[in-house]
Image (cartoon, rainbow, N blue to C red):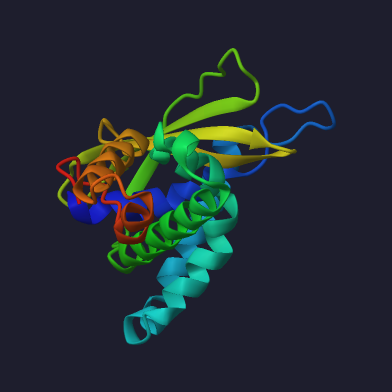
Length: 208
């Protein structure tokens, strides 16, 4: 099951584009746009499989072009720092955001490498009370027939969406990372600089 989780995340991290309702113009409903963008990513993974199997660096280009622009790294990392965000200096906040971003990108690239034509379906979309936020729920079907639910928590950024958090198979990834960072701070005897430097988030609920 692990093999499907991060490919699923990467495929739908790009679900962070375009608001379902803006004051300026009608745009595609979030689930429709998510599907179109996800299908585009999957098409690219299939067509470039030979290239990135020979040269893993190709995956970095795919991440930079298809995933990185659509994640709210600042907001995501702020939530992961939790109470330590208030204690951190501006420099430490920037350093953590950069470390967190690099870790996620490495994770996404690794996940893309294991993509193996998994299929997905989008659940009926329910619009929330806050128009600046949305949750898109999907079910991924692994090659063994296992269903892995994924919930993408989006926040409106201008006239588009960005990914702020997600749940994989019932596991809140933001909360998992937050607990891991708290453990890292404790392990490094409350030295934020060392905790930030050594922090490597893992989507496994058990820790790093």
